[in-house]
Image (cartoon, rainbow, N blue to C red; front, side, top):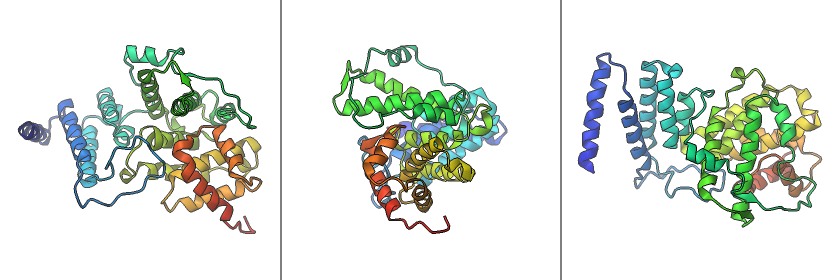
Length: 348
């Protein structure tokens, strides 16, 4: 194995020599560097104990995933960016192909940087057909005695992000995958097919990465960009969790805060908008656990939840949008307790 790895590194060095002499980087070079990056990510070393706590409870979290030699991994990612820039940057279809390979290797930060968000992912026909089969993974009927059924506020949220925007249908897919996974864990799913569920999750992951930012979407509504960032928090925080030390959650949290800061005060007085904002603030606020931005989310939630007295009332609101109780409830309850304890200044 070591001899093969040594041969691979020699080939990389040979290719890099050609790049230094003016040749455009090849696919083989970029994919070799990518594979080497994965090896560094998988390495755990005694003494690398600077673990960053994850804000969500993740049952399928890889053991030891935070024992990362990040200085090596980040160096490789930066090198990958530089080489992609040398052969045409983001406008090249060839580079988007490389970006898809990166996403398959579960390095979403690099994939989000490299690929064009509006370029759709290609699908394997057999998997796509299986994922679209509505006779598989059927949710068993459930009576909801609560005032709000799960997902019941999605239509209002889709209006707020722009009913014709590419984000609106993705919200339905996100809610479906979350609901099916939740039902599977509780034995309330019939005709179970895990391959179909995995295919739906992968399709959702690609769909979330493919939603363009606000400036590239003419049909966007007032909440488009905050909600787009929150769906990515679901993606990299819960569905395809990334090690916190990579900094991707922090980047999304800061982006959500910046977008919410741009909203006018009038937006906070509309009932439908206010409820959607509570959901956005809770998702991003949970993701901000352990970050300095968390206090900002607590202060905003204090303004919007003064009429709410019990956690159950808050949870029903969150579930009426998109929510993953097993992964998010624990940190959300802590956030809610901090919100209730937060003293609201008279001038707010």
